[in-house]
Image (cartoon, rainbow, N blue to C red; front, top):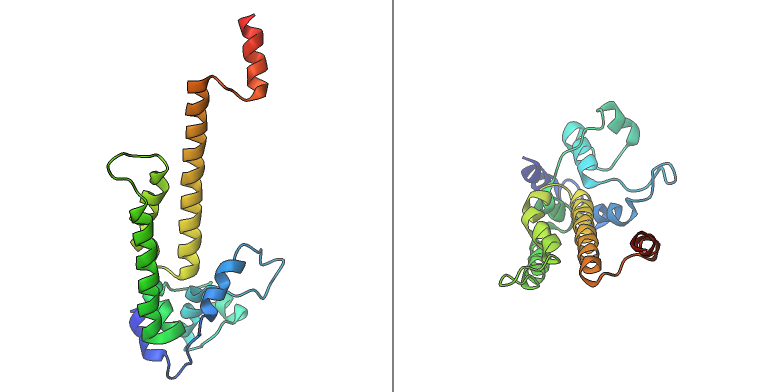
Amino acid sequence: FNTSFIVSKFPKPWEFYYGETYASVPVAIIPRKLWPDKPVSFSSQLGLMVRFNYRGFDDELWKKTNMFSLSPGFVGEAYANFGFLGVVCLSILLGAAAGRIDSNINFKRFDPMDLPRIMFLSSFILVHRGDFYTAVFYQCSMSLGAYGFVLATRRRQLSRRTGSFHPKFKKSLNHSQA
């Protein structure tokens, strides 16, 4: 429903966003307390479009709807920004990114560093049914968490193999051996 609604409203009666909805992605980490008028995600705007036939965002109106929002999917959001050309270009970019990640995975010999890449690819389609804002932050946080886990695990394995410990623990190890 959401994508068909978007296609029926853009470019007429409403103008394309021309990338405006993607502006919320890089500034999302800034708290709204510090920047009350920062851009909102497209899903919040889509909720107002469907409920009130209103293009744009009005905070008071949104609060009256109990902060109702709808998921446009990356196809719907790309169409609202650049039309059919936006859908084609975004699909090519996401396909190229997925191909690059996939080509870096060594399927013959498992490397723990491949775990974040595999997680990224396996959740790629599920995540991108939401708006771009949500997808970017979910994918980044999942990948960073997985990389952190793998690096911590590798560091621990390396210290066990080589006997090198953090200097603080090395002192306590020497005292217990004496």
